[in-house]
Length: 193
Image 1: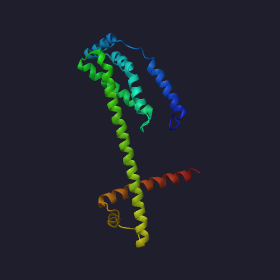
Image 2: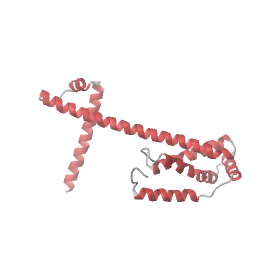
Image 3: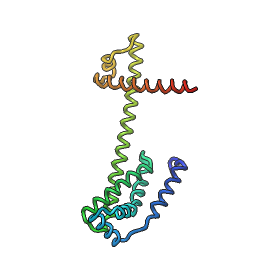
Image 4: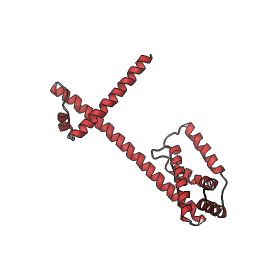
């Protein structure tokens, strides 16, 4: 049972993607070996393409395994496809046995997608921390304005927040830029009415 409903468009895209990926012709080890040899010895674009297409199912499977970790399945599949391309290139250059290409590709794709998911999680935590800091900053500004009867200086804000002065100034600059952008968007919206 799913924890949350997926948008219908995403389900259709996944079904279409699955159909497309599964439509590529399967290759046996002899065909994979010949294609790897072509990639090693020439600029055989069609050999690379066939090897990549043959292994896109790995990208899709690995993307599905990580699809509930904060990155959309389509984005994971795209990242997985890039990893498949890199894996095929690397494996061809190594001159390894055709039978090991699928496992090598799976390892490369899995590592790349794990890194992608971790980077997205780190970015989300960073965004959440910024929002918390912005809320603290604004609360401190309001509190000091009420207490002092005037706008607080950066030094006073830094003291209250127990932040370095540089951090206070950076937050003040970022919030001022955001407010300016927000105000101009509102003004433009009102002008359009």
